[in-house]
Image 1: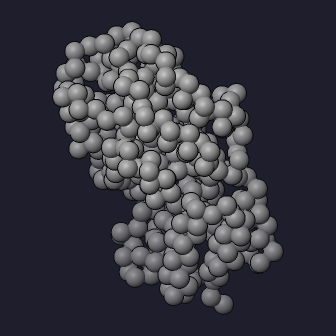
Image 2: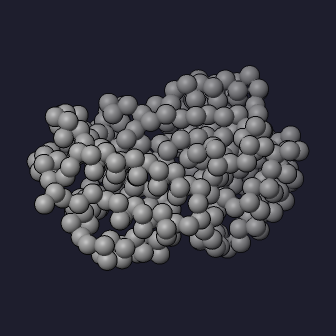
Image 3: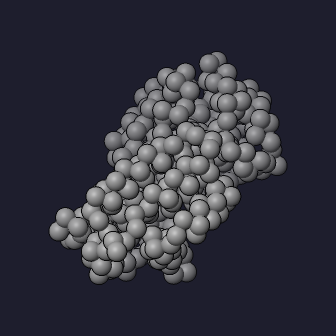
Length: 339
Ligand SMILES: [Zn+2]
């Protein structure tokens, strides 16, 4: 088999390659794991291999008409669906209303493929789909036309309808090792070694996050700004904290919110490590002096209790619609420096 353009997740690549080679394909695949872990990248490689015109062992070839169309985003047998948001944002995607999107999938699924043998649908962040979308999707999964393959990505399968999960081949993807990310950043994205090492430590196993940083005009600038803001908030009074919570809730951007919480959790975990004398295990390797200072400024019991709060709130935000209340709690319970 040719190598897929996927870093890590080798077991999943092999599973998918085998199912193509032995035509033991399922109608639906569910890629589960944290944001920016590589779920969509893997699903796209799978789709490309399904649609590619080359011999099975040579897919994806990258050169055939099918591969070129897919890369250009214009393959008539491949549909990519952006997230549909539970909070109602954004309301219209690609000019389609959310409930129309599901109807559109059903309609398209019934049509025969135009170029390839299959029609492949990639539905990203299915955990954020609303109930109407999920129910329509379920109908398609219950009686899928023979040529239809649906790939779903989700951060947490417990939020999906169990009837959807049970109809899918489940691929639970794990965070990548720091070293795997560091090597990929240097070898495939040409990152300077020092930068690759820092980004790999901060990535929490999410290659997509690290690559996104590389594409920023100034890598880590946003993270540095967000950490400075965090320091400031921990010294702020109730009013300023609640104002910040309100601003976050008003932005209604689930992905940004979830990456901010990941950043905060990583920071406070490092503070806890520094307080336990394990500074060398910290992820924020470029900010060890600040971490050592912060560790001295806060009570260890407060930091540990706040880490539990962060975990709890992250869970709430996946399930609850009352984002505002959860964010108020998150901000108000942030530790204050000892006096
Ligand atoms: Zn091809």
